[in-house]
Amino acid sequence: MPLVRIKSLPFEQEVQIPQVLSVLSQAVSDAGNIEQHHIMVTWEYLSKSHYAHNGQVADSQPINTHPLLVDLIAPNFNTEKQIAAMLELIANTIAEQVPIAKNNIFINFTPAYSDGVYDEGHVVEWDM
Image (cartoon, rainbow, N blue to C red; front, side):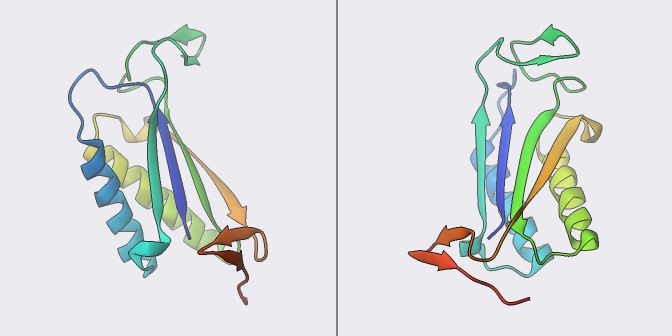
């Protein structure tokens, strides 16, 4: 059930976002031994001049400023070590796929709780 939501400014050069999403989805699947149909990855572009970092506004995605904003939502049964591994995997995969420095990626983890997720037509409950 991992959900990865990525936001950035538009890139100046052509970036194949559908390919990036597929590669990232496969990497999360492989690393976590999670079936693909349980993984969701989205990428949204922020409007030009609608993102300030360090007091500066940008029209397109710089390599070293205006960090990519990534939200990772995953079940709370993951250990701290597993969460850290997922964060590193996501950062490494994104940095390999798009023109962005790895240290210019910000990822926030939000735990999802049993009985707090609605998926596949019902409230999901997991045993820990």
